[in-house]
Length: 323
Image (cartoon, rainbow, N blue to C red; front, side, top):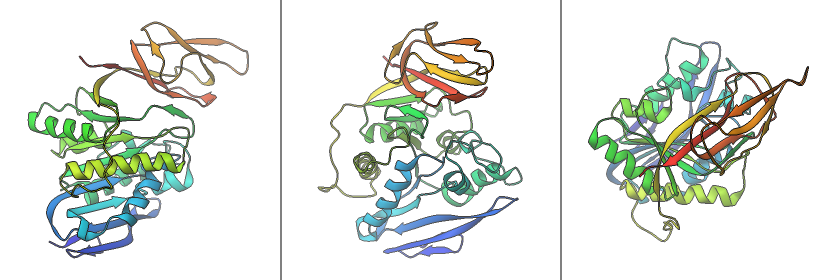
């Protein structure tokens, strides 16, 4: 079958590169796409990078993957979008878009009649994600974020979909596999799950890392996922994971109650207990100190490295092993 997205077409056995315009209301942006239409039938797999600005590893890894994979290696159809949110990637360095201050990974599946970021999310769902057999959304710790590599998936209440999500998440080959207990919310993979599409989130690297070794780590993971999904055959490219994946569950999310300067006492990788002080926010005007405590027991999977924070800034995310 021909793979067609907007004006881009790839016949079976063909790789097509190009951009498509996305109308965001106040502006139009060009979204880069690489379509690899395999020479034999198989799943339609969608991989997105560049959903957030300042997360460089996914942009690099997806661009490299698009260059490495040829149609004769692929069963099915592969849709790769290295820069899924151009305003944030090119115009911002943090999770929010400079167009409207919105974090796109809180508003999926978006609204085609909404603000610029809502429209961007809706465009991605309409053109790329709808109709996929599997969806992989790639992220990393941004320039202000310490982060442990992990894979995220959701429990949806649909046993078959949950099994697919979990199997995909374990196929990545990272030790930390963290599930959320519902498919609610505006995250890309949760919104895809609500449409019946198996989907995961993969986080690789931290602090705006762009190191080739980190990119290689993610590329290895992507080869394992594609092999698991039946999109590529086993080969010497596919490195076996060196760790045993283990299921964890999110237990707490600590947000800043005020604006000020953040001084963490507990950092990524630390074990914390509920009620423990994990840092302080200092008012730069009068030196007032706000103590910040952990709202759950577990390990800090990512934490804010940046100094300046505002109300609602994520300071730490906490997860615990699932027994």
